[in-house]
Image (tube, rainbow, N blue to C red):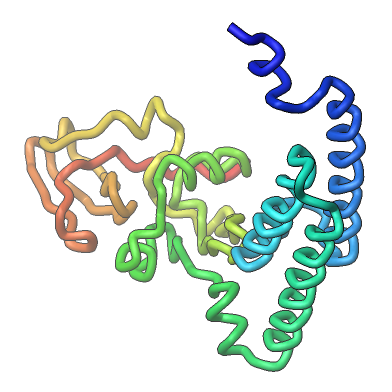
Length: 227
């Protein structure tokens, strides 16, 4: 076994220093590019801007480790990527249709304590991920949420009900959320496990959700106010 070839390929050990220098240069170029773009973190990136970052990463990666690819080649790629970014940004500033096409639109995922029709129709709501967002903001059930919007950045904006407006809702903490029933153990208000719609159901009764249509799993609704 040729250990030199395994560890260094067909290059000399000294090429490692060149790789380190190339990596530093490309890292600084990407950093400067992001600063020019005015973005501080991935959470602020739209899908379009994330595509720009991937393009920059592709342009920067090869010159870091391949001796036969010069840094100037990547600079040309960088220039093209930033020109496209600048051009599309200008188009977005002057056209709402292009902005919606490239960046998407915010979507209501919760309305009045239950999953919105838009979210059900487009199947955009990942339950575990959304429940984690509610728990992070100290919500214990969906009945505390007047509205929630999925932003184009992927973040969730939440508008709570006032304390005197809170209604029974689907719990979001696992110990309660996973206590599902098809046959109700007692009279009470139950929440659909899929969409959060609530319904008064009698003991020993079985029910189908009239909102999402295809669910017969129910969770006992709770109505505590947000602490």
